[in-house]
Length: 331
Image 1: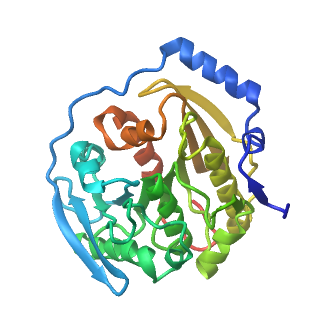
Image 2: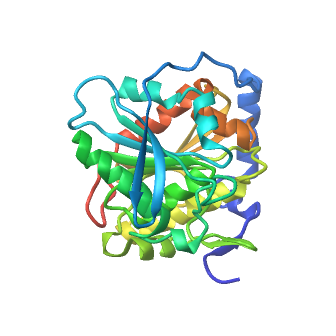
């Protein structure tokens, strides 16, 4: 086996947190609160506009929500959906992240994949044709981002991208191709950069990320979420994802960050979860959240429905705490 290349397995979990320690945390959380149902308040009514963006790589529509007040100097969040019909998926859940956008004061956009580009509406994060700067889907997402920055006078130091499942995978691609555009990312239930699907493997040293970044390379802080019971994006894939990014941080920022978390806490809101913190020299480079109950669909609902507002707020609190830096710097 080549150095830094892993096939998914329980070894990836053991490198970061022992099974006994994880089992103990799971037991405490389950005894304290039980596995709660994904119920919650009704969807937040917010104004959503529908737009279209076109460049040489193609055309994509996107939904846009602008919080009340002057937009000059506000942050921007780009949220990338997972697979299955995204328009119905977002509309049915009431665009819940708009509530957090109004609370925290950021412009929010939801780019929409087309069925012509992928029969399941997935972002093609795994396709080498969509993994380079200024080409394919990365250029479209970046183009939407630049358009909104210019139109609304967005603070260029506070622009973020995140997503779930295929959207999480594409968030990783966006950070690797545009580290000079996005201050921090939220790759949730996605996959490592440059991942091979058959067999499932990836270079976890972070070298592929840093190579893609080129002279713009910098440690891009990231908020990870991986459901422990996910049967689609298996838990070891999430562990592989953060291990790859930790390697990229060390390479791009000359850091000595360990693979093990600096600290671990637990929560039961909105579901039992563990939260790992990765901190270097006072800079929080990553959080890794492990909800213990939901499957893949349930995890997606947490990030796109009123049931998961607490978790969505945690994601945005992490992202908004970071500002864009120059090459080699994380904070």
